[in-house]
Structure formats: structure tokens, C-alpha cells
Length: 206
Image 1 (tube, rainbow, N blue to C red):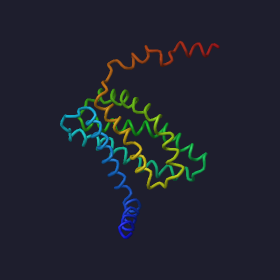
Image 2: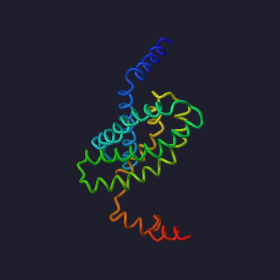
Image 3: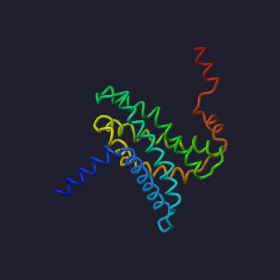
Image 4: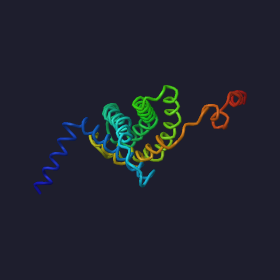
């Protein structure tokens, strides 16, 4: 009983008095764990690349932990409460505004750490970051609905990291296994997924 009481007291202290440090630490560790799991899947008998894990923990873990800590505090100040309308607004703002910014920041920090040239860094951010953002739509809207509806602010980064362990593993896969496509913008336009000027002209003349 005393052990549980001590653990509860320590948890309360960590998530109240040292929230920023605890959020960064949790993000750092779990992002590294995601990369470790991905490396285990990539090469079952291969050697663990500790430098790669450290880079992922720093570029994705610390960066997202820092941004999420301040974002959630800001979001709860400007949109206080847990009513359905408020929760939906938070989910929309989080997914449409914050997520692409956070992913782009992580990709650019990773490129800086790896000493990647500017053109490659932008291509990685656009192509790999875009893939990660699309994957987020599968996981995060329902997860964040529960987050904003039921959890206090101080537990949100912890919750995010626990939920995102699978996503962190996928992030490491995308970062290290998915190749950059040359002339991506031209191929995207040629694929027909993006509307062309002629399409806009037809709409205007209807």
C-alpha cells in the first residue's frame, strides 16, 4: 500500500511540477522504441543501429514532445471545456493545423541532424511527410477525440505517445525504407489527382 502511495505521489509530482521535462522524456523514449521495433522488423538478425535510433528520438521524439506540450496548453486555454462542440473543434484544429506543422518540423530537424542538402530535405518533407500525414487520419481523429474529451492537459502528451507507438514504428519505416520519387510534383500533376487550370475554367463557365 505504501509502495502504491509513493508511486502515485511521484506520478503527481512528475506530471505537475516537471510536466515539460516528463513530456520530452516520454516522447524521446517512445520514439526511440518505435525505431527499435522497426529495425527489428527490417532485419531480424541484423545489428541494432543505435545512432539511427538516437536521431529518431531527437528529431521526432524531442521535436514533437516540445511542440505538443505547448500546443495542448494553448489549445486548452483558447478552447476550454469538454463539451462535444469544443472537443470537435479541438480535433479539427489539431488535425488540420497542428499535425502538418509538427510533421514538417520533425522532418526538417531530421534533415538538419543528418546533414541533408536543402533540396532533399524539402523533398523528404513533402513526400515522406505527406505520407505520414495521410496515415495520421486513420489513427488520430478518434484518438484525439478521446484525448480532448476525457483527459486532463498534463496527461495528453503521455497518451499521445502511448497511442502512437505503432505510428512511431511506421514513421521510422517511412523515414528509412520509402524512397524519394524524382520529379514528384510533375508526376503528381500528370496522375490527374490534382485539378488543372482547364478544370477551373470549366467550373467558372458552368
